[in-house]
Amino acid sequence: KNQVEQSPQSLIILEGKNCTLQCNYTVSPFSNLRWYKQDTGRGPVSLTIMTFSENTKSNGRYTATLDADTKQSSLHITASQLSDSASYICVVSEQTGANNLFFGTGTRLTVIP
Amino acid sequence: EPEVTQTPSHQVTQMGQEVILRCVPISNHLYFYWYRQILGQKVEFLVSFYNNEISEKSEIFDDQFSVERPDGSNFTLKIRSTKLEDSAMYFCASSRSDIGPYEQYFGPGTRLTVT
Image 1 (cartoon, rainbow over the protein chains, first blue to last red):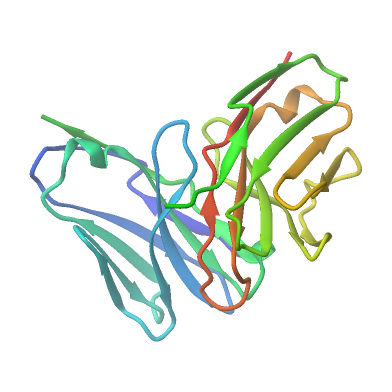
Image 2 (image 1 turned 180 degrees about the horizontal axis):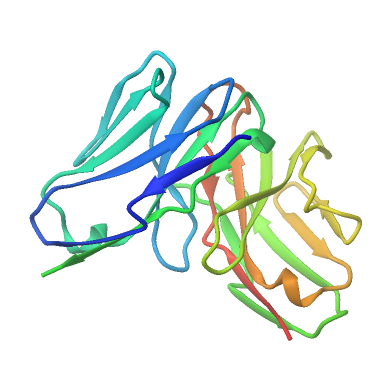
């Protein structure tokens, strides 16, 4: 069964600290993996998209890693800011087509001053 | 920067009523999508639309749902007879392509509350 699991479910960190969010998936065959940031009451915004051949991708203070062998991904946030408070969603694509996007339930990150 | 817009931001309706949720995708995009997110749950795919017809739909997208692109800019989701369990955030998204790691751009969502 194609599933995407994320951990932790929620996380509270102090402003300026780093954190790492985890994503494990069982989606097969794998096409690509995306990380989205979703502010409360807003639509998801894409942070990174990685294909099978990519094992790391950065977008500013966000760095995603992918291990396609172990089917794990992580999102590392450096020097966190208050505006990083949001849900971070891991989405794995089985193949071309929107019906083949499998969403995780997200990690709720709260950055406190 | 172009963005996907949705109206209304919040819709309250009574059970059994019809609702139409509206979206304006990014102008040069060709693929359009609707997703929903029940409070506290994961985002779920509903339907994708290309070249004026449905290209994919999920099990959730039953006969109560329909989509339409009535003109060159709007993309609508209609729920014919709303149920309590239709209460959710509905997100519209668009993309230029659906091949490979295509980028999807999401709108801000419409919160639908069925009473």
